[in-house]
Length: 114
Length: 114
Image 1 (cartoon, each protein chain N blue to C red):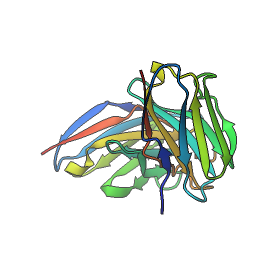
Image 2: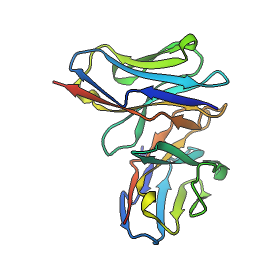
Image 3: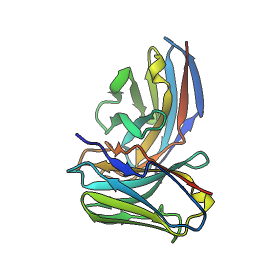
Image 4: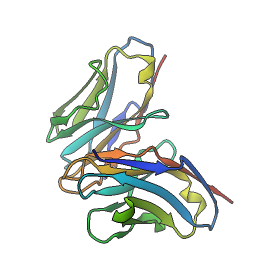
């Protein structure tokens, strides 16, 4: 079975540019999460979708960040405009129904903002 | 609010030695607790989980963890370290009753010496 698929794996961009990260969850999984990982702050939960609906976005750092899930098989995380402090690895994870805590993570998108 | 604290950002053991990675939790309700492992350039993978059943939980790759309510701890152990165990390990606690919205500790990098 295919796992959680993220793209791009690596992105290098200049400050001020728009960045879009993409995620395809595992088929049949109805919850999706975006996490950010940095050396300084560790793993931070940004936003959580259940059945394509955003449930908790309290971790989204500021208005420059937005996330959508237009259907069960696709989600995007957008940063506009990007800043150097946004440099991090962004992970998407999905989980099926009542499978407590069994998140399946993608391999991450490493973002570098110059 | 639920949180976890991992003591020791780096742990080094010799191959064949006992592995002990420490995690303490803070939770106002009976917690769901998890250990995840991250290998270089990969996403996180679930090692094991505690969901209020047996207090000693066995996971993959010979790891186990014991839930100790009196000590608010959930330490991860393995009797004999293998070189392939070198990775970063994350303790996590659920933020919601469904057990699918997790917050992670800062991580412990395990190094295994030959």
